[in-house]
Length: 127
Length: 370
Image (cartoon, rainbow over all chains, first blue to last red; front, side, top):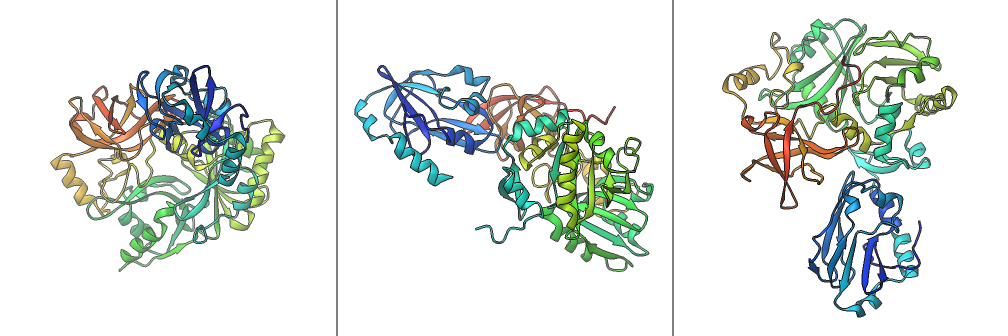
């Protein structure tokens, strides 16, 4: 199981990274491993706004559909359209494959996210 | 949590080799190995896959009236079956609803019936309840009989070096008895993937031996063969449109509704015949169809199906991403007026309508059907 040390995490296995004034999100290596082959990702419209903890999308593996959660309040500024045809990138490169970018409306929420060490403990407990 | 689940003799092998174990039909079975369900599907279509399917049940019928009794129970006219022939059939209730779908082998000393794991007890009880007045012995031989499937275009090439029997000339839907690496085995040229291949029945204590021997044959012959989990087994059976009990068929679905009329011989007096003839005369109210999504999304069992106007009128029974046809598709029951290929449909995925279209089944033509 790989952990991206430059990201912060949710207990529900989404990673978030700061890129300038936007937050970039994906799912962790542990999450893609548990899901197994991803066959479809449902993503929101650009411009949609969500609160921290809201479901912003769904990742579908061969056997199950799993909700994706917002790490902070914010407005979607980009979705990764490549995933429409190549959802398997989530399996092959979970930290290189982002799902959404959003502009946080409360940047202070960043501090509430799990650090890589904290997330590692969560993921290990889940194995 | 899993104390009550049964385990096959290969349980430990699966765990040791990356098998992800899940509950299925009362058994703890590998849903996938490390390769993942998509690759497991692909390797079976391109070379060969090996399946632990010992959860399946096997029943043996013997006695003076065994043939007459079985012919009453199942929809296919088994008196037409040559020795060592194998045939698919349904076992129906008087209502025409389906007790189970079965594979029947006409063996010299018995009628051998392969049933679904989930239905084994129900089937046995149903058969016993119908046995009055017949001189027949019904035995559940599932525990002593191990069942593996080796499927794919190279399945025969892999197995041939392990047996003196001539597998190449064994016709589809027939069987023979032979030793496989010294183990007395019933080899059926049958399977549930749409590929050439075999299903093997042999003494259960040889399970690990034959499993490992067949995988080793891959290295010896240079032909790819991998263990395959239940997830790929499902997508492999879906593409050639084989039914799975609990999805395309159940006690409230008849063979006619499920497009399985071809497996019914109306010249025999099988249980359910009258109801099916009545249904034929009255016309069907629902019919199994195949559909493809035009929009993207993964259909799943239980999702509503609507017509072009958005009125709900059916339900998805199998839905998935089909790896070989490379589409999101499924099976659904709809009123017959919506069953024609080309008919537009909507599949309601998480309250959102997704455009779909009825397509011709099967999605993938079985390799052995020329």
